Image (cartoon, rainbow, N blue to C red):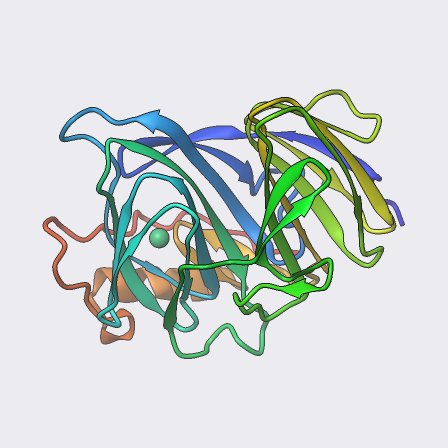
Length: 295
Ligand code: MN
């Protein structure tokens, strides 16, 4: 195997609905970790009055959005009629399948969240859209960390959040300096994404906020040594071997398909449905640039 054993990936900054976010994936160096194909981290931030995050109705295809809230409140509305307040410790999982539209708005003065996308495999990517809210997730001690099992299996426990490919997501948090050794699946690749504080993974230099450490398949354990107040996400999965094309809010396979999604959305095709109750305009897909078919 030619892939590196590990790869250190700095996040780049972006803007989502008026909020600055750090985006760890995708980058030129790495597109996916398992089916995780888009990793955004916002906050912790104090929001100015009347500011905050407001993302008007916009579409998605071929993916699941996975929203993990650490601080604050976010209101989700979608074209299935779902209206769900997301609170700390909760997950919203929206399955776009063949097409859905949603809006998101913060409803708190502080905000800290991770929004991650999961690519749907070929067999599910045109499935019916769906939305699920998970108010309670398994929590367990892991060395000196408190772990929340977001998706997948850990130490004999299984998250209620379903997945369509072998996947792991764990939030690890410590108030005091903490250490843990985690057993890994050698068939999985992994990423450590720091949300607060810093952590040393095995022998690597400490990793801080806005940095992702990628570990290729083959490892059977990982040692973490974290500073007080550290929070990180451990993400993993079986390498996703389908060629993915991500553009704007769409996940597809071919440039022509993406152009059609954008045209359908801008033409207000019934495919995506309509979001009710959001006070503001729907977002328009920008002109689609020349896209290359993924290798
Ligand atoms: Mn969205």
